[in-house]
Structures are given as C-alpha cells and as structure tokens.
Amino acid sequence: FDASNLRNMRLFYQAFPIRDALRHELSWTHYRVLLRLADPVARAWYENEAAGQHWSTRQLDRQIGALY
Image (cartoon, rainbow, N blue to C red; front, side, top):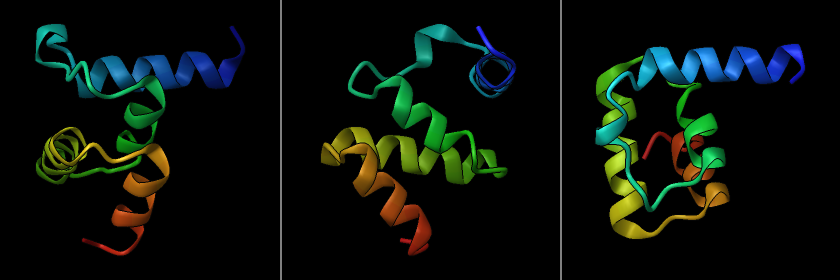
C-alpha cells in the first residue's frame, strides 16, 4: 500500500471504529467521500441518506458539494 492508502485506512478506522455499524450498501469509495466530512453528525446523516436513497458515489459527492 502507498502512503495515501494507509492514510485513508487510518482515517476510516478513526471515523468508523465499530465495524458492525457499517452499511453494506456503501462501497469503499462512498466511505472515502464520507471521510472528507469533519462533522460526525453530518457524516452519519449522509451515510444514512446514501444507503437509503441508493446514491452512487458521484451523487453522494454532488449532494455534499451542494450542502443537501
């Protein structure tokens, strides 16, 4: 793994320490987009919306950019 992958894995573990709480509907790419959010409440909201609404990674990124 290169340095950026290791950094993303570390951030992922810090943001989502309880593995059982992860959404199976979301991919690693979804979670990489969610890691950019500093606010854990906003991150949880977007995570639930992305899984519930079946957003693609591109749609999730667009919704975060538009402050949906």
